[in-house]
Length: 199
Image 1 (tube, rainbow, N blue to C red):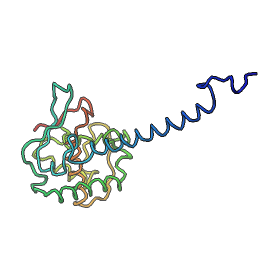
Image 2: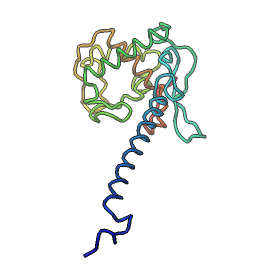
Image 3: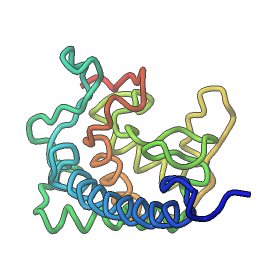
Image 4: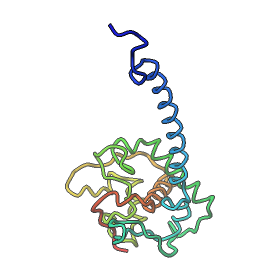
């Protein structure tokens, strides 16, 4: 039998208890610091997540040879539904869109930024989806679809149709604003192999 005073310091129970407490405390501190750093990087108006007023501009998605991936490109003025919005108006509209998407449980079928379900199309770059046909009719087609998906669906052979969620016109427009803003976020090339609408 080994006596207590013969145990090597690094093999003692006391050492491992103290080590566990130290490592837990250190990792908690690292987690807190990383959380603050991440929040700074994902807040609207940061380098990778544009301010809400970006919905007043044209948004495209182009290949960047230096980064070896596609990235959003913010272009000239192209106001949503022909209305230039102030920062407060844009933020209010986008927040209503986000809340509507949450209230209607859109992520039960759709994916946003890699989160959600895979039954229906990924909405991360939905504003840029070529399925809307042409840039000139995109807003109208999106609005008509959201207001009456059963009669305006383009299933592309899947026969999957979105149910009518009973959206008001204001809610539908706010969802479109949210999706336009979402398409401006630099997602490191996600989703991959995405083809955009003709600009």
